[in-house]
Length: 358
Image (cartoon, rainbow, N blue to C red):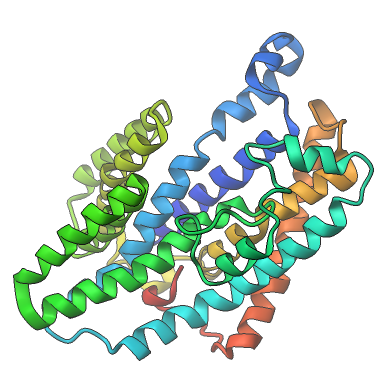
């Protein structure tokens, strides 16, 4: 059973990603803000507080392993790995409708928003990569098939979907490994090591985050800890999480493994709480974290381009941008989640089970 601590953790990580992207889209860089610190200190504090988006994305991969690889590994240890059809049908009924909706939404939003005056230059030069150059049919269909970021690039303004590509690939690799281990025993580790070597040759981050995904699954089976140890784990995780922001991207991905294990270890003592201890609104919001994550960036970009381009750099304008784009993300997420449930004919459980969480 999930705990309130895990629900809160997922929402915190989601806020790090979304608010960090808001700052990146609408605020000047830190050196420009520091030039007039007396006037811009609220924006400086905002950027300092919400600058951990990459670390949060890495931890989402770890938590995916905690939620999905954990039960899979438990089944493997019992020698009864779920059939491939049952396992992938269950996972893809949750993921595919949201992913398809997010990619179609990105195609529509990007095409329309680029028609606004001055938007074309912003889409080409305003962010970390050229959004126009990735707005291609190859990337569109590659993202639909979850090939990003290894085999195709991001699609348009929806760069954050790279994590989804990794996670679906890890579902496949994780199931294959667990199936092989259940059939031939420890010899399957040889295949896992070979796969990790090949993955690292293609892209080191691919292999590191697969290890993080598996580590999340193994952490799920560790059991609870004393509350004092729990608090120490959470404090240590927070310190390491902050320090990992100073590391290069690959090392930050490596650091997500101990951070995730400490966070999970700190939350595990609360797993035995009864289901009603977690407010239903928090559980539902937490279980929709992937829906929100999947669509937020194109919505943030289009809101800025259409309503705040060039005048959301600080003060009340930035606060208004945060409020407006936040409401837009919430509205689109609700509509997409509703449509995805209809498309997948997914039951509306009042208390979703842990394995169904994203």
